[in-house]
Amino acid sequence: MSRSILINTVIENPDIESGNRIWYVAVAGQATLDSAMETLHELDRRLERDHIWGVIIDFRRLDTFPNPDDWTRFAIRVRLKLPAGLRSALIRGDHPRALLAKIAKAGHQAGASVKVVDFWREAAAHCGLAPDVADPLEDYEPLLVD
Image (cartoon, rainbow, N blue to C red; front, side, top):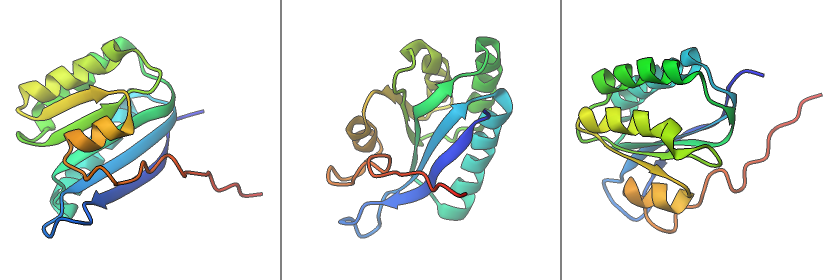
């Protein structure tokens, strides 16, 4: 099974007039370098089109990560593409923290504020969302089509 996008949405703070616009994406299946690059391209589009202030990438439903050598190449792209000042949280789920540490380090080198977290609340707080913003994955139920 290849990687799939479960949820791809922009979340806004309901109680802030200007609203912190955060792009939230939850992935599932098996990640590849190509799928990771697609996510990075989508981030570019979201920055331009939706004027997002931060990003939360949720790996809790992801089965496997790509080869660690691929992560190194991907981290180089992150360092080149991530805008300074962007707030980013990576929800690792059951995956080892070290797998995402390279990406976080590359983001820091680009001037972004990137944090590897274990839970939704940590990610939401880091990206500036209000504490009452619900976890999008909490009520997620896949649409089954016959």
